[in-house]
Length: 426
Image (tube, rainbow, N blue to C red; front, side, top):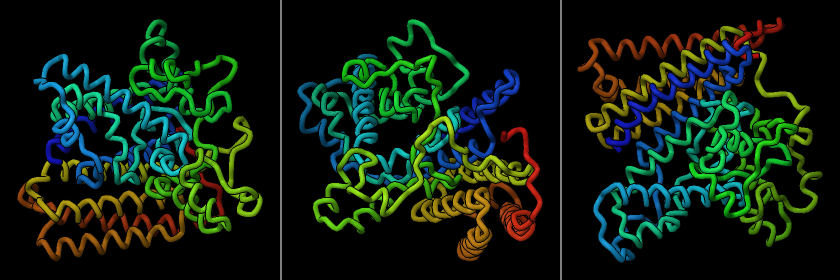
């Protein structure tokens, strides 16, 4: 946990810098593909995913360490060769895990968050799941285990392979010539994120596009079919925690309503989007039928709400950085208390972004939670030893945040005037 947290402390500002550069480049080109509210939601999703991973809130039923101890035919030391083998096997593993997440109803719940943005930009790459608590696909690493690739090599290569998927989430890079035949490029991945019928469930590869070409799921980006992004059952919220469980909630309701016991069971394993016969009429849900004719979510926001949301996200990143840099000092079980605070934080300010009338209740809950922490521990998880009066800074921020939340709910959201649109969000 501690080592991964240290890696993320380096990776987070780098990702944020690249997102800012993409935003600035959009100004230069006169085309804005990086709306601020969408980006805040995406980065907030990345925050929840990173916290979940660092806290170790997931397990593998079948661990790679066990597989290599039982299946290895050779003993291999860490070398360029073992890292190359690990990278290829992990990419194969990623292709099939990714493909099944698109094709099986239950598995789609953990992946829908990544596709939920109605934009396509670097920030949306950070939309990652917190709803997957069990890794079922470790068996796909069996080829590496048989060859005796050390577990440490796999552990190092996995995050590298994940981070390398960041760069191709952009609309500002066109086709890349010869590289299109070998690597996943922005063009390939635009196809993957599109909801156009021509593009649905294509290009599942993560680094090497060869897997899609080998297994029949490749689709080239067509100049006559501009990609439209999102999910056909739109999330209609900025709250990443809600998005993480929307599809699971739909499956649960449909299973409850199903009269046939066979349907109650098979709904979880049918192709993504499958519902029992007649449910679209009996229990309708909003679905995009015409991909070129629908309204994007949450585009009418005032300057105040946009800038406050950005500020909340940046301050939350500071809280996250403090946790990742001090995991050992904060210790168990306190890191889970800190993690709970971060999840409440993200839930609270994204509820405000959605303009929910009761969003201030979540902010008040966060305030009370923080008071409880400080009362119990005496300060904010040892912050006073690093920054004099650090606890007072935390409580000052939380007091301001609660006051601002109440302002938005009681004044701005209830105002009959139209909000002042911000060109950054158009």
